[in-house]
Image (cartoon, rainbow, N blue to C red; front, side):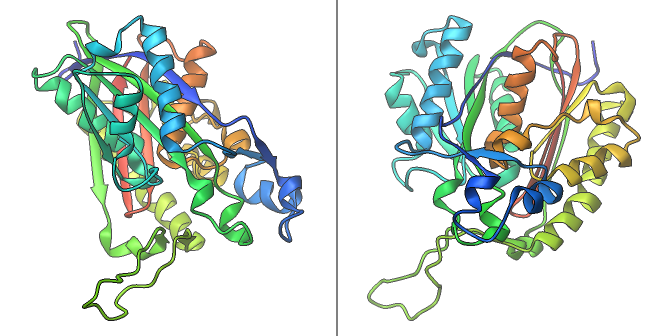
Length: 328
């Protein structure tokens, strides 16, 4: 058995994306852009966007698929965690809505917001609950409706993002599988590089202390430099903790932000792009949902199999980075 292995099994995976697909060519009718401009810079051709759904709807769809796949009843769940930066609202939180929708009477539920690192941070929280021995079965979902956070006339941001959800069922097990090592790091001093969802203070005693600006803003150059410079450092720390080399990992399931960033990671580690799969060409950047959607597609396609070692890599708003290495 791998030293330090937390014996937690990823029992099922699932995804839910809106049916509506918006291509780069369709965006050219809303703003001055084109597929020829977007794709070489990002690796994105399409994104899925909601028409009459919200974040909890996508997350609930994932939850139902997970239970069906595992043959579990909702009553078996001890907890539900949803990672999102685009909840239906501040209260009730998205996980509570999901818990009510699937009638998981015995599960506690809460949201976690770590933006584009949310999948890894959420997996960390879920695995810690199970490793404690106090809980046996949990559900974790990354879900985003980022289309409500972007200005659809701003081509520097709106072309990047899509809507979707993905998740996993986890259980405590005696099998030699689970989390080998993780490394989580935050860079709050760089937080202004990615901003969204700011509220104005309108209380009776306040001055104009904060602007009302719901839209997403980012310094693309700063974020690109951060990702290509800092993410490999955190990945190396996680590999060192795991006692592994980059060659030992079968797949790196990274946040799907930009194809050039992922190419840089693969080059940095001397690995083939075959080990750094991508699907942002179809979904764009779905923040906390992106690794989960990719994971589900690879599991369903038979590319990821039991016995493999997989590294999950998240990076983005906060700024924050998270890396986990699992024995599946």
